[in-house]
Image (cartoon, rainbow, N blue to C red; front, side, top):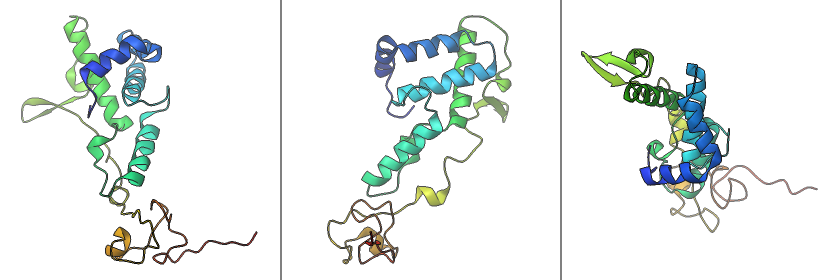
Length: 183
């Protein structure tokens, strides 16, 4: 997991009741759905998500926050994993735990692995992280009227949008949208 250390994980295990209960659920799970659900809750908790928030919601929330604060494209590897990617990670972690405990003879290909060129390789995800159009949003954070070449949007020949920090795509000279002041 990107930027989640082992020390932070162990600290969270000792201090957070929800994290600890989800870990116990993962260890005692009876179905693959239970494993995936507990794994998603654990990973969400590691990224400081609210209990039962869900990774896709957390990922979107973190993405939106970074769009507002970054001046460049958001790097997807810095976001929490998608629910789809986390499901495979959880399955591999569960398989590893069972192997360490010498319990159950499970087929790795049914638990987040696949065979490629005669080797087992992890299935990382079966879906795209996000649409490419979404990942390449350009926005500005101009303090003035977005009327110079310093405006990131203007520089890229784009109109300002709601993702822009100050103007929010309304009321600046680089937007065709106007604010309706009639009350």
